[in-house]
Length: 443
Image (tube, rainbow, N blue to C red; front, side):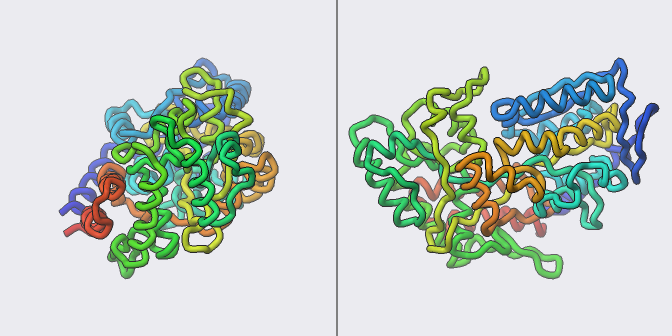
């Protein structure tokens, strides 16, 4: 019944969220439904962005705001968001008539809103967006309908890497980054032994609810095709309980128990701030998180003194196959169909994702296109590490409108949290799989 309920909800949402409006006047380029407008004199648009940008690349945001105001005469009101419960907040805004003019989506969220008719169709103006012919495949696909129409524009990508304290590792006699999983464990053993008397010290902080990292271990032994579930002839089958997937998760379970102190019942949302406090030697995080750990931005909770003490390396494969396969996650930008200023919203998205801003963004996160990847990797050794991970084997969630952040991702979080606490991986993941397949297929 879950799928029937979800389908009904999508239809109801589509009814409430009418087809995209066109901008009322001014210079505009009209697409199939979407527009690009520069007539903004006396107007202020609302843009929802995640705090990742506020903490990591405010210079990019400010540059886009300035260029947008110069070009359109309109001002920009950025409303900073956080990922927890974001879908619920966004649903409320879209259904209440208070939709922002441009909004950031995690690339795991967009399928739901595309299916509900909640986003402006930008297909007709796609060519106006920089590098649209070389967008990263997984990001581009997440913003498209099954018919190939474009509703969301890739913003940035991210893969998880090992972020570690060079000074803490060096004090333990580790001066070169690990290239194999065996080397990594040997290095962590040295760091753990060196800090054995330090209360609350975590050699490698791995939150139990960080399902991205735990699933990567499963994908390492299972393979990257059809991770979590795969679809055949319209029906989804689960892969979480496959023997090879369980094998990888058991490796993660032991790894977590050997090196991580605390955190079995929490997610990764505050691991950067915890590392900034000085009691964590390493985390597995997105490339830009190293900047967040050492950020001096107000409210970021970073520690600028760590700026030259952090290093990043691709997480080695536990099965000996190069690098650990990571989910190529990231964000898209879109214009809600109920936006008050859809043409201006689309214009902000165009500027925010153009070559100039993406080149600036490449200092912090993987840009949205293949053309600028070399610029990203040339910035720093840390970027080389995440670029290496992004260029290796990657995986993605089941890209279905029935994938639920509130239900399916929570099911994975709960399963891995229990496993980190000592529960049997087979039983815990079987429970999660039942929930996920119930959402994807219905019953």
